[in-house]
Length: 391
Ligand code: PMP
Ligand code: GLU
Figure 1 (cartoon, helix red, strand yellow):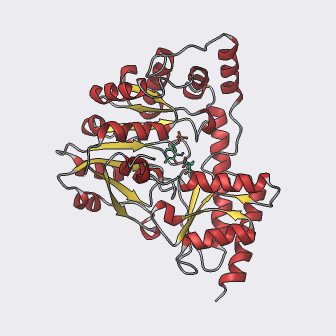
Figure 2 (cartoon, rainbow, N blue to C red):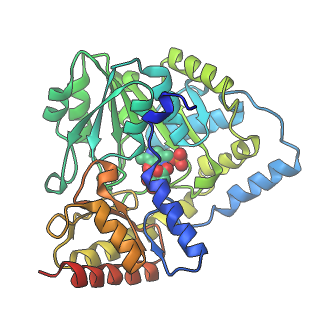
Figure 3 (cartoon, helix red, strand yellow):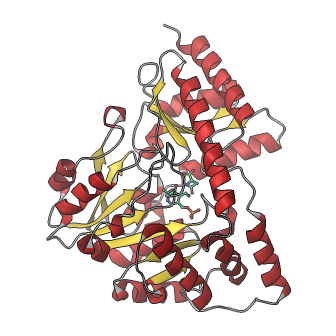
């Protein structure tokens, strides 16, 4: 009954676990969830007001496929202001969340057998989409001893005549690791003289800690600008995951034209109201809200990382970005799926098994939740480990 294509795709484990945790909570179970990749903050008032205004003024017609001229200009201005990137509005397309941006990109770029280089551990969705679109993922492994970052040598050795795309998620989901400008430049240098495209997923760019600054891959130099497709969205920093707003920017017009063709025959355009609501999220109006959330995440990172590191048998590298900790449980249990299932069943704590991100022996702990829950949840993890894995 079903297409062969759909059998290539697995359900997203991050979405599945956070939905399960929400369902168990709704049934009245005492669940503390650290599985969601979404901020617990409410969407800033200015964004809500812009949406209400759009509804009241009857902004309810179809828009241009890529987005309204107003929102395309707002994204172009944002990329110039925040990232020193000079894109024209016609270099940009708005999608239904960055996940949709990535889906659309792999759909228009990949032919059967094309190779896509992905650092591992990776966000669950990349290899799924690559496989669905006929490509082959080539993983570059990292671990906590190298703060989950690949080296230029690894990248160089992975390149074959079939390599088409290199995906770099900086800062990273699930590890929170962050590449410096120098590290990015060294990776970009490896790609010089090739026709490999870079998909730079920069959705966590604003969630950085310890005073560190973000560098966009496309801003490194002219060569990097030409080969990079910048992907970003409003789900994380602007606390708008349910609104569904993502975008792609590339100077390569043939890519934008292909994306528009696909979008015109699928979703047509991003919800008109959301396009209006995105303006204050892009133009600096909510910068104070973003800073408040960022600073809160930083405090929670410190709290959660030290509390987890005090538990005997497990360890975590303190990351510089995003809102995740990738916790090493290899010393107590190599089977992360089993560990996470039992932790949920017996301790009422939901976290995502590392195996879903391509790395067993770890779990992902999202600290996008309040401090009290973090303290309570980590105590439950500690008790669970003491009871079940004490040596
Ligand atoms: N990229 C990464 C690395 C993510 O963690 C997410 C989270 N969902 C996305 C893209 C997609 O976000 P969204 O579709 O909500 O914009
Ligand atoms: N990106 C988030 C996560 O990793 C949200 C869920 C998803 O889209 O995967 O949990």
